[in-house]
Length: 201
Image (cartoon, rainbow, N blue to C red; front, side, top):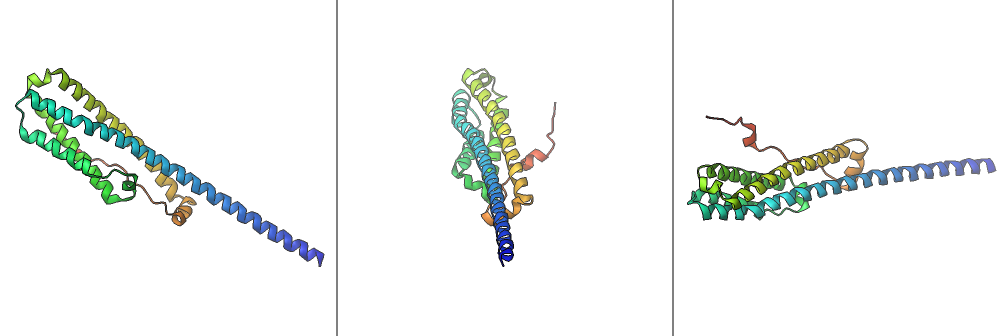
């Protein structure tokens, strides 16, 4: 009788040990997913910072262009409208979980990039503007910001890749399914970037 009790307690102890081990493993995977999710959110914040820097530079650039040259109104109107569209989008971290909102955000940013490119190309026809020190400083800051945006978007995509990979791999996929973690969106090249630019001399 005592032998059966010892065996029963041993089996119960072994089952409790395995339950504790399984629970600890689940907590570890969950905590890893939380850490990676926060890394994605942090990377997103850096992307937002650079987009905000660009949005802050745009009015100064447009005003400098307006003040120096009798500039094509439609060009700076396009820039102003594109900036307005960007500012209308709520850039909260929740956008990362909503593919439609994320795509709208990316399209608005691509529209602003395109409008700014047209503005800077049009400036070439105005030598007095190209000689304006204030304009040259703003142009340099804008170019630097565009480079920073590119770097931060790359870092963001890398953190999303790590997170999504962990989320899809076994056993992370099981814990993610129970705890509500979902895949994040990547930044993608705009459709215009897929076309080969034409260079004419």
